[in-house]
Image 1 (cartoon, helix red, strand yellow):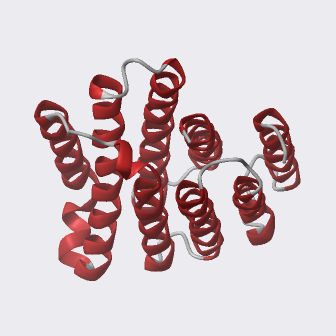
Image 2 (tube, rainbow, N blue to C red):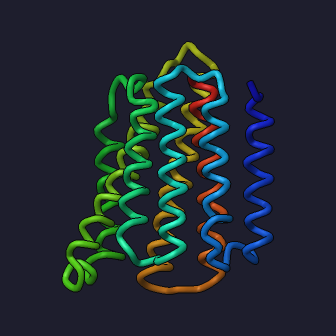
Length: 220
């Protein structure tokens, strides 16, 4: 079994390689962009997490890899959003059993954020391409679920367990980064497309997945 540090070193190395070979993630090299997440999925299976969490977490990263592939092929296509949503669902199921309660104020705040994103990004798209707008709305909603439950775990989680509290904090950071990267990718795809924004969103995306990996590795 590999240690978490070794797993992160391998994942980080593959991400840096992709960063260099794709000129700061600006070139759409489909395999290289997906490879770090495939590697992270395999590394997750080599951890000592309990089987349910390990499988769900690994599947989440694998679905993200597939989504990244499709997103690099066609940044405005629905396939990537569908697979990113599936990835979020798998990740949620990886830690659902430890979510004892969800804070209503946090849910309300997350819903307001999601509605604001919808108005900012998808209002016009809903009229032009309602099917795609619906899929993207579901994607944003899946991020909100992870944000709300991760924040609730920080607030109401396993208070007596230092590792669990630390994992909850790291998970929340990862959830915020994942949500932010999705938001930036949508802006880059449907509003202002710049290479710099694309690179930043990718860096945040890979960093967020590393945080999500660490969180589940420590929690389970």
